Structures are given as structure tokens and as C-alpha cells.
Length: 337
Image (tube, rainbow, N blue to C red; front, side, top):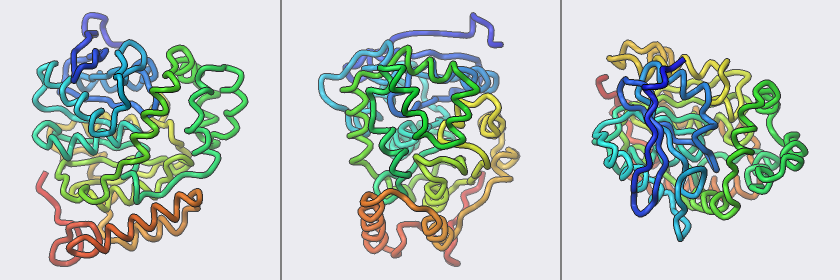
């Protein structure tokens, strides 16, 4: 258990938002960016574990929990600016970043805009936005229902729409669903976040990001299928991929998940090349791997068709025709660790 004196809570002013922040532990700073509608209490045991190897930084999204609300909906770029400004206010000039789901979207944008700030990055259960593979129709319908976090009855009735892996997790760990129900996002804020994510894509520029990145996907994730992890690992110039069997979208919150040892090792290792999470991860060096993963995934229509069209448009528009930056033999050039 982390000692009480290592927990620091504050409110920082960031781009006109009063952002509630909690820092925990005493290692290298590690920013945890939560998913859609998330609050700090949802991190639970994950925050405790990672604070054992790093100085974790968690925050309530604007308009959620103890953070103030913006007068206007915030785009992904604006959310990233708030996070970046908060880190500056806290005095952090270099951090590691863990982004989950929507948080992975903001993490990608932060690494793109502030490469000087981000040392290492882990992307969990996330995608590149437009050009990615959508989830199943039931999973997407569930994500579009903010009112379920304001009604315990509705929440219980709609749990059947979750993937089997996520349903089992929530059955085992009541605290996870209680944290969301106790501090639910307003419908306005939730829909604003959903709107901002639906308009965003990193596909045109992600191959220019040079931050060493660990990509983690759950094999049973029905909201963000693991094919998206394969695509991210292909696009990112320095990355490793782990697809975890029997894990769903919410695996980051599971105390028994295999994702936590990987993250602890990745962020704690002084030298990246000695991190087992890195050396045992898969490299995705060819477009064929992405195409196979996409072909094996259903994806809800018509979003899949529209996203596919955008993906092929970006590939045709890229100088080398595939949206990545290969070296002379057609694979990604590795940067020394």
C-alpha cells in the first residue's frame, strides 16, 4: 500500500479550466489519461500499482468529478492543450504517458505536439480515430448511452451489451462500476467527449511520432478491436505490440490483468532495451499484417465502410503510398533505444 504522505492532491489552472489532479509515488512522472467520461477514482488498484514504480499523475476530465467545466465543447486538440498546460503548471518537463481509450487519443496528440515532453508512451485499448476499425454495433451503442451512468437500473440492464471479458471483470470487481456511478459525467460533457473523438484522426501524421510506444490490446475487446493495436504498431516508428488473450476493453482496471506487469516493467526499466515488456512485444513491419487483422474483424457498418474509405484515401495521399515511413527494405527503421 502506498504511504499516505506520498499522495498529493491539488487543483491547477489550465487553459481556463480548474483541473483536479492527484500525484502519487516518487519515481519518474507517469501521466495516466482515462477513457470516455472517466474520473480519478476509477484508476483504483491500477494507480496504486503504477505508483510503486513511478510518480503517477491522474486527473478528472474537465466537467467531471472535481474539475470545472468548459463553456464550450472541447476538441481533442483543446483537451490535449489542457493536459499539456496542467503538466507545465505542475512543473513537469518530461513525463511518461499511459493513455486508455479516449485517453490514448489524447496521448497520441500530446506526443505529436510535444515530443520534447513525452519520454515513453503506452496506448491501451485505443485507435487512430478515422481510418481505424470500429467495434461491434452493441459495443458502440453502449458507448453512446451516457444516461446509463446516471441510473443503476439502466446500467445493470445494459451490461449484457458488454463483451464477455468486460462483463466478467465488472462482476468480479464491483468497485469499478461503483466509481463510475458515484461520479457520473454529465450528459453534456460525455457527449462532448464523444463528439470530439468522432471527428479526430492521427492517421495522416502518426508515422512521424518518434516516442517509444508500447501498444496493448485485449483480444476480447469489442469496442476497440485488437486490429487497431496492429495498425497503431505499424504506424508508430518505434513500437511493440502485445495482444492479451481473454482480456477486454477494460483490462487496464483489472488488478489480475497481465497488462499491469507489462506496464510496470515498461515504465520502470531505466534502459528500454532491457525492458521485458519491450523485448517480448511484436514488431509490426508490414502492411499485410494490418490488412489481415482488418479482414478478420467484422466492424459495425456503415462506420466501417466510411473509415475504410478514409484509410485508403490517406494511404493513396501519402508520399510512399502507405502512410508509414519505411526504410530501404520496406520495414520501419528502428531508432536506437
